[in-house]
Amino acid sequence: MTSSVQKRPVRVVRRDWWRAPTLLLAVWIVITVGGTRLVSGGHENLDVVTRERFLWPSLLAAVVVTVAVVLFGWRREVGLRRPGRGRSYLPALAAVGALALVVLGVTAAGFSDASVVLLVNVFIVAFSEELMFRGVVFRAASKRYGTWLAIPISAAVFGAVHLFEVFITGNVGGSVVQAVLATMAGLWYAALRARGGSVIPLVIIHALLAFSIGAGAGAGIEFLAVLVDLALLGYGAVLWSMLPRPTVRSRARPATA
Image 1: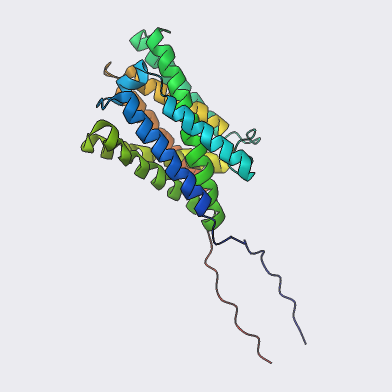
Image 2: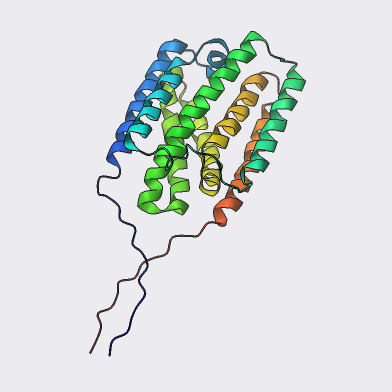
């Protein structure tokens, strides 16, 4: 007498799943960090650099990653597609949009030349970072470990890469702070990515938040961006908790006669 046992589909992962994403990440780091070092000239305050100089290294890095994504056929898998019908992005969009309006109102920044340069730069940086970390890195981690674990993994990688800022600014303490903040932001960015399936809204959210921080620097209202970031971290934690957690697979026992 035989019994039919329904087996769950097994996710097949190639052993070299990490090679192409890791190489692409290394190239991205070299272009972004090395190029930004040249642009900044070792200036310790990157906010000033972002408001005054065109960040071509981030644009070049974004182009390189985009070309690689197209060549490897990863376009949909990294989230370069229209968002799904879910509304997970809307609270984050509303929060950072309102923050940007408040910052512009308080600082009376308007759209000066510095504001235009800042806006262009933050959108370039946002696209480059979202495609690399919530796109390529998140895709690789989710294929190997599943979506639930891909969130903290991609956030940790995002935060660790910000430690390389020490080679740009020479400020060790500032780089560590940036790494911690980037890890926190990376958690809710990745949670939104997991729920919505697209990086396009994340580029807008990321850019508006960075614009608010840059425009509000020195005006004594940086705490507003920190509060929004913490609120969205909580929101991301809720979204993360709603995802199915990975289950521990048990070895099948041999059948007995």
